[in-house]
Amino acid sequence: MAMARKPIYALAGSEPFLQLQKLAEILALLPPDAQRSDFDGEKAELADVFDELRSFAMFGGAKIVVIRDADEFISRYRESMEEYAQHPSNSATLVLRLNSLPAGHRIAKFIAKSGTIENCNPPKDRELPQWAIAHARNAHRITLTPDGAAMLVDLLGSEMGKIDTELAKLAIMSPNGKVDAEQVANTVAFQREREMWDMTNEIGSGRAAEALRRWRQLIQTDSSAEFRAVTWLGMWLENVRKALAMKRRGENDFSICQALRIWPREYQGPFMKTAASMGQPGVARALDLLTTVDRQSKSGIGDFASNVERFLLQLSAERMTG
View 1 (tube, rainbow, N blue to C red):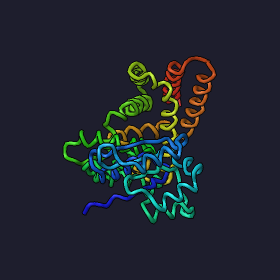
View 2 (cartoon, one colour; view 1 turned 60 degrees about the vertical axis):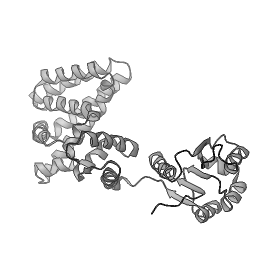
View 3 (spheres, helix red, strand yellow; view 1 turned 135 degrees about the vertical axis):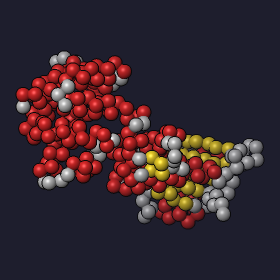
View 4 (cartoon, helix red, strand yellow; view 1 turned 120 degrees about the horizontal axis):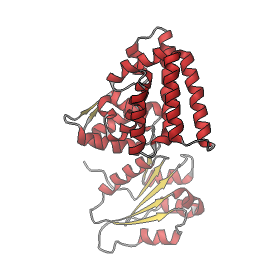
């Protein structure tokens, strides 16, 4: 049974993706020819908004009025908006996109009585993988495995819009409707990170010439790689440090790689071999060296690309003599 349209909605929360998702659900309740008006809450005038809400649609259909950044609008016209929320117009739907709406405020109580308040705050970080699994199933009709969800969140962070975009790509690319960590790792968005991973594995294996070849190829195809390299190499070295600590505690290679999100599986063996060959002292020296590279690059001593190349050569030499 279809949900009935409410005269007023508050989309309250800090996640734009969830606000837009709820707005799409509201629009789906209206006729396709519904007349829509959008206002910027920081600039909108009360009279203009009320004129839109209380006038009939030009062509006889429904009307919807959307106010972005409505926190400021409500602050300026609090009494008038409280009055409107108690007696909203039946000829239009008002949607307020808010960063927050405390439950104790009078207007929140009025909106809850005459309309609907939708929670648009993002889930906690630990809940994001489960959200990604549910969203993959409900919005994209694919099955995202727990390891695939963990990797997706690990790589993209908490931006739900980015997660949704990648899930849409994965839905098209998945041959059987199931997506695991390996498929996530193989998507276009993560190719540059994989190429850097390959480069660090070459260094760890003592193949300096091959590592340099990969690095030079990478900066030719992606001009931003030189600026991201220090961050990526630092993350890689931090994972090596953690792997060594876990190994000392008696954990096996598979559980270590699972905990550190070392994907796909064919990278796990080379990664653990690299960690063992460097050892804790080698990691500490490499981190010091990388810090120096970053400081020099930012202070104008050489450029990022050549400084990273020098780091790779020194790291290779360190491994061979360490």
